Image (tube, rainbow, N blue to C red):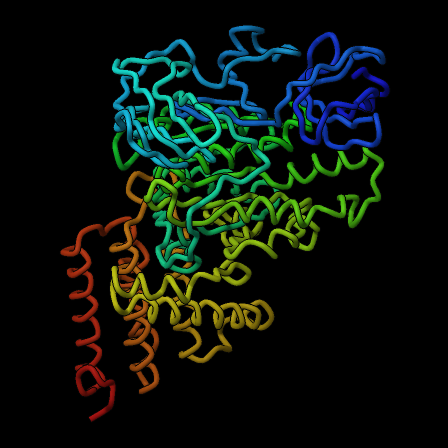
Length: 590
């Protein structure tokens, strides 16, 4: 093939008689990496993943004979890749601060020697997806070597040595058709999902330690979530918190088209963060993909698929994987630019008509199920969305809402008032609540769902009362309504608001979350009984009690400390009963 026409990252080639769709090619004298995305007769359309300046018609295009694929093997954990899985550390050593064109490098270190334990012997039967060996990839992750998909047969030879490079043959398997050499790595086309033996629904939550999420809008393992929000509302900070604290074994963080300074923060912070589960570096269970807004737009489009393929590989080992995509809006903008270059008919706001199906294909690769190794693995996808001006009616946000079951809508007013995470409790939702309520009731406290529903009803009523207050002031409210406003402020400040920079508040255990919720709702339930029986609200809302309830997330940690506050509240209400001559615990006058 030769170059016929160039339009930015889109190249038209002639002489495409032997190529196939999605084939990887090397374009021009610089050998730029590209992918065939359309074929019409002997003409092929290629999207190039690198800068095409100085490329000229007539330059030769070399086929590779394979699709855009990810190299999957030990050494990915702790690594930092660009959108097409080129290791940035290697590229830096080759070309310095700016990535040179036409550079290529192995995604994993082929010189490193690993200590491998092989579980199979000559004559054993093996099948696709089965674990045949293992090694320690990092202090936090055991890398389980899998029989490649489609390989089923009898082991013919096994390497006796335990120390190997990733390119060494560990085992040979005789199938019905041929003999296959099993190495420590395998390749898989990124646009083709890896298979599960059986996929099923789950009622197990992904514990995040973030109260606004775990209590009000939880996500299940294997679920999907979107974090839409305008500039400065805390999308990246929320994803950082989830990456650090979420109950996942492996984190795949995809920086897709975000500004370089945001990815710099990730690259600087993540190696310094401690994994709370192991006390090792967070990078010991993290894979980073950095494809910033100043990098080639077509590689931005590919980075999403590269990341999810790596996640599927670790899922197949039996791990729970969390994928953070920041941001899918930049990925959609890459689709829009490429579609324009291809002169396709635009749909709403210039996005291609297939935007919805592409978003669906990405989120559908989440899930939980039994792997071919017999283990349970899951992929949870959490995608940030960056709507222009915070307009949630734009196409990317609306199409994303069609395919995710959890929606954490970030609110600009909350963010600008320093309320983080700025998840709006009125516009956000979780479709996993019915299933997960059963888990929380069983594993945390049987009253979990009851208290959560009561808290949501108070917040909803508080919003209605807030509109009245803004017009005529709080003084017109009845005491029963004033207590709702006051307790709702406890919920907002004491539960929904959380300090990511506080060692004591960055993560909140489920046990503490329930105690915070229980204390707040119990205080309301007891207060409303007294107020309905004529007790003055000033007697119920004394300054000392209000201060202690409002500050309990910072001041209280153990059961004994919460029991002490409960005792103090009991004494407070007992005094009211005596003062107003009420029957204890009933609030009814004698």
